[in-house]
Length: 181
Picture 1 (tube, rainbow, N blue to C red):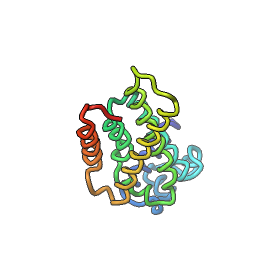
Picture 2 (picture 1 turned 90 degrees about the vertical axis):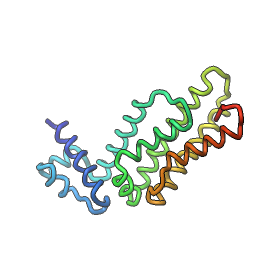
Picture 3 (picture 1 turned 60 degrees about the vertical axis):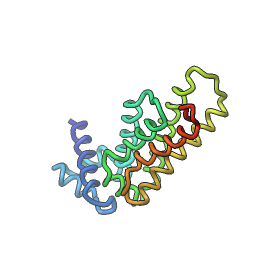
């Protein structure tokens, strides 16, 4: 039964985050919505930040499991964006809270993973030095992260995926050979 309770706490917390800012959610709100007592909450989580971090960490692991391979930079960006699009309002509430650093740390992990996975696939049949690979991963990871953060800073108003796809289409058209990195 504890796993059911823990899952209910997480789902309730995310639902509340979809409705209101993080600083307006209390343990009391969660336990009342779940129909449990405070001790049940504290049995599973130390506090709200621990709950938030566990939810984000699990989502990152799910995303990594769902994308064992990535075929293009656009796909890597879309995979990283999944992390944000699943619960747009909740993510904005987290991003605009004191827990922004937790979100950014995991977002950077996602961006690194998806870009690293793509670079491995792109150079599967070619020799690339560790230093060169690290440089490519760092560059594209930061571009992916930066575009998502910029989009969050503007309130998620435009279609950031279409923008990113257009940027890489322009890069490919300038290269002329259809390859990208």
